[in-house]
Structure formats: structure tokens, C-alpha cells
Image (cartoon, rainbow, N blue to C red; front, side, top):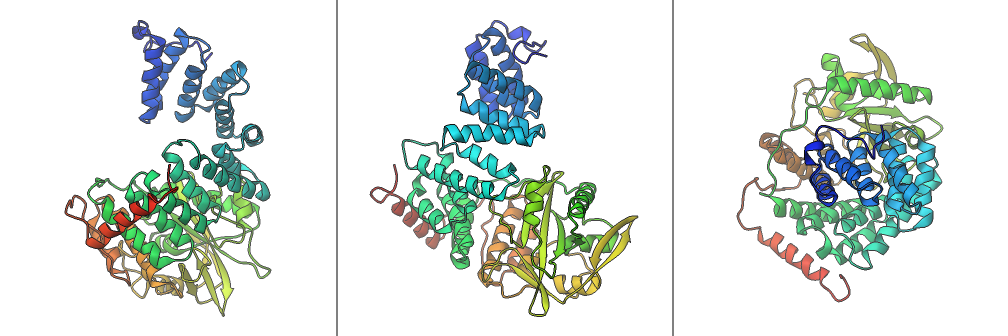
Length: 475
């Protein structure tokens, strides 16, 4: 089928419309996040006015967002045939090729864009996401951050670039630069709550957990009443098992055995499958006596996995998505006669310590899995002596007995963050349970509460806006 000329019964009644009207209607659907609805209007516009780049480019984007990478690729190629210098089409071509599992060709497309424009931050980030070479990945992450800083410092950039820039600086491990950037351009970010959200993450990444909690509390207070609760997406136990099978194949091919850890072990030990109310899959890897396993390389080089931009070789925690399921990988390292794992390496970040253990293979419903050789001791150390009693409000990052030298403000930060998410889903019972576990008193305003902000939050919001208006601090 020729994507430029194909028609449909859905398009024929609208033939009296002009191509401009059809293009506008299609672009409105794209902006509203409805690419499938955009396609008929854009195809009609393309029939009425063949070979016009904005039409074909919009149609290519619609096909791509609708999951039709082959149709998108044909349209992007058509645009490049009309104008070989069209960088948006070249970037889109790279996205389509990547979706079609043609990684080398996709990389070539993204590299062509960055060769033509050093400020092509989206292409730099795409390179970082799919390159199998660590040096190129780090270079691309750095270049994306630099490009966004330049774009935000000149002209009248789109508001979304400021949020992207703050995140890119943190991906590049430039927490201090991110804090300075957010403070300088606070007025250009979409609202004071977003300013505090960005500062909370940046302060956390810098190891200033107390200040991170302060900004998180400010963001939560400023946002309350503006978001309606929505039900939690169902966690698929079948999908989780499939993700485990895939991880077993991927890590097994690299010669790295893993074991069921934390909540995933708890679910399998209780009922032979993941917990129905879980939100991710937890797996552990015992560090070899010779040092760290290069899990980052395994993730980076596998075509079905994407290494988070902030991740680095030598990390002891990796978060990824596989088959639509969130997977958390923890490296358990021998330290002080114990086994230790955690989210980061900064003093005071979340970390757990366990009595040393080996692994044993067991069968759960005809599936063989590795687990700690003393699973009941491991589960008791993780969840306490009552581990056999279900407790949906428990959070191991907040109140696990295995937590080791974790800053109380770190634990409070997680209590507040997770309670905020629970309340957004309308689960006030879980939110209250999470807040009760915090070692530092924190409050979470109820959704729909339109009363005045606490004085401390009002003062902080005013101060942040005033700082952003200093001479030369914003365009």
C-alpha cells in the first residue's frame, strides 16, 4: 500500500474539505494523544495535496505513535526524498527503524542528525538509549544535557524544554548544575509545584535528603486538589512470570544466575506466583568474588532492554521494563560479614543488610527458580517476624528491619512520595499506612482540600518565584 495515496471509506465523505482543514484536524488529534484518529484526516490531506512535507511528516508521526512503524518509515523516507536535510524526518526515521528492530540503521539515522546539528538533543538521547557502546552512551548523555542548556539559554524555547533540561542534567550526574538551573529558570517551569518536584529529585541525587524531603512536601502541598484519583493499573502476575522467564534467558546467556528477591520471593513462597497486588518484579544477583557483575553492559547490549540514562556500570540497582512489566535488579555485595544491596551508594541512601546466604533451586508450580538457601530467615529480615501475614501498606524502603544506615529523611521522602501516589489513585488507606511508617513526621493534604497553604509552604513558594526573577535569571 502506498501510504501517500491510499484512501478509505472513512475519508471519502470529507473530500469537500480543504487539505489545510484536514491537516489541522489531524494535528489536533496528534496533540490530544489520539494518533489513530489523526490518520484518516492526514491521509485525506495527503491525497488532496500530495508531496507537501508538513502533511507527510505529520502522517509519519501518526503512524509511528499508532504503532505502525513500517508505515511510518515509508512516510519518513518520502519526506527525506523531498528534502534530504529535513532533520525531524531523519530523527523519526531512526525511531521507526528502532521499532522495527533495526538498531544499526537507527543509530546511523540519529548520528546523521547530531552530525548536522549539535543541538539535536532528542537524537542524542536516542543514541544513548540504544547504543551498545558505553563511551558513546555517556558522550550522548552529556551532549543532550549541553544542547538543552544552550537551547534554554537562548531565544524563546518551548516551556517543556526546561523540564527536559533539568532531567537531562541529572541523567548526566550533574546534580549541582541541575539545582542551579532549576533555581534560575523557576519561572519558566510549568508551575511552582513542578519547580519543587524537580528540586526534590535534584537534592535527592546530591545526597541532601533533608532538603529533598522539604521540596517534596512543598510540591505535594501545592498540588493537592488538582489531581483526581484514578484506579491503579492491574499488575499482571502472568506478565510478571513471563518477564522472569525472559530475564532468566537473558542473564543465563551471560552466565549470571539470579534469584527471586523481596516481594517476588514473598509471593512465590506463599502461593507459587508473584503477589497479585505487587507493582514490579524483584530479582537479586550475588556479586562474584572477583567484583561487580557488569549488569549495565548486559542491559545496554540487549535489543529488548533499555538502560536508564542515569544508570552507570558499577551501580548496584537497575530498573527496567520488560514485556510491559517493571523489573528491579539488585546486586548483593559482601560487606562487613554481611550481604548488602541498595538503591544508590551515597551515604544515607536506601540500603539493606542481610545475613550471608547461598542459593538453592526450588520448584514453584513446575517452574524452577533460585532463591536464598534460607528463605524464611531472608524474608523475616526483610519484612519482620510477621512476614507471613499479608500487609499491603508495608514498604521495605521505609521500615524494613534490614535497612542499614539509611537517613531518616530518606525514609520520610519515600513515605511521602509513595503516599502521594497512593492518594492520587484514591487509596487513602494505603497512603495513611505509608505515612505512619515515616520516622520523620510528614503530612499529606487530602485531595480536594482547597484551603490555604500552610504558611511555611506559602513562604517557600514566594521565595522561589522571587529568586527566579533576579536580574539576568530568566528571559
